[in-house]
Length: 208
Image 1 (cartoon, rainbow, N blue to C red):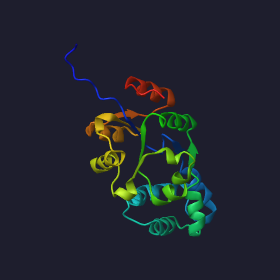
Image 2 (cartoon, rainbow, N blue to C red):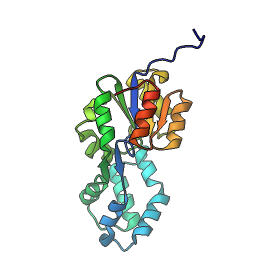
Image 3 (cartoon, rainbow, N blue to C red):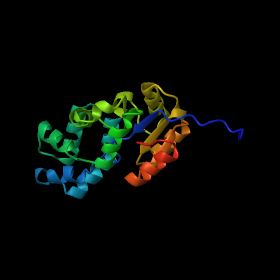
Image 4 (spheres, rainbow, N blue to C red):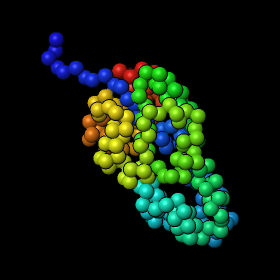
């Protein structure tokens, strides 16, 4: 007997999406439309980065149609909404080891998805993935109306998965989002690669 309180067993694993489950790259999105605007690639990247539009879209402040029209106007894009959407959702590449891990963990743990994302990425990519039904709880920034690392979105994720923070592990590739989870007393892992993730999970008693 050490006199130390027992640590609660982990019951839930909550995953970020971009950078953990699928990688993403906006470079191809901008380059695809290089011939459809008078702007240079560098100008488009700079204009969009400084516009606040991606964050506004991911936090639900603007609609998908508004996002398309504002970006097209800002970058001088001569494209249809359908062409824009097709390129916008083609930026993802699966991180296969994470997907295999999700499948394995789903047999023993409640799984959550907690993502800063937008309507088009969710409706036209994420929700159609073969493994998406394995998630017991899905919390999305554009639906909640706020983004990680704000406290409210972690609170909503915990409510959705139905577990206390001490029984959950959260995995994200951005350190500020990991720190946000830790402030909520959620066990959190900074994702930098598969081997490190598996090792960090094992340290918390999670074995796939």
